[in-house]
Length: 308
Ligand code: CP
Ligand code: NVA
Image (tube, rainbow, N blue to C red; front, side, top):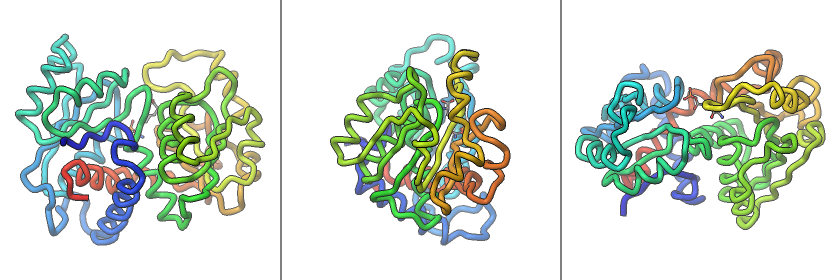
């Protein structure tokens, strides 16, 4: 049975917890070592990751590449603009070919059905590097960051402010698996995926949509936001206007717990969904969160190969 990582649920709560512990251990073990130096045990020696990008990326691209180097393997990056996929070669045929040439495939794309189709036809593990529906690799780094900063997941109150997008869907999915609660502060018409909410609630998480941004943030342990216009979406003045009251600023942060953390997957649009004062302020852990993409990817890669 091939282990694909298309959503957090493919691994399940126990495996997610094990991956986070593995990431914490490996991160601690290589503190101070140059970033391109392989870990002593090189657990993925001889393995190659093929990364296919149909959308832009800075963090996902670099963190997967560095992760493979640290695990003793290598990575190849393909941009759809200069591959045959971009000229109409099918996902199925691309899956068959890359499965013969690489040991694991990562895809960043628009329609989630594409990553499912790739996994269906691949004979090696497939990792979702972001779709319009979800961004599970990001949430692995987010959970790692929250735990690293001393907060236990069960019972945690996470407040999301802004657009009900792919990143939020994966946070909601994580809530059901790891038993934390999400207070979703989104304007009407921009709710996250209803199926993710239903699944998380069935898993025992308390997921509430709260239209008043101040109420959503009140008493939260973690405040999270993301860009109001995601990749592939048209720049719409009406959407920006609807989002404006949900900006994460000092007033909103003041309503959360005094030791609340601020997370953002990045890239940020400073002055839109978040102010400079919050991004660069004492509660912001966004640079740890970005670095943790490397440590989280390593554990995801080890998990798909059955090493966790
Ligand atoms: N957070 C994230 O996925 O960043 P990139 O788009 O730069 O990969
Ligand atoms: N919601 C954003 C996340 C970027 C990492 C997007 O899809 O563009």
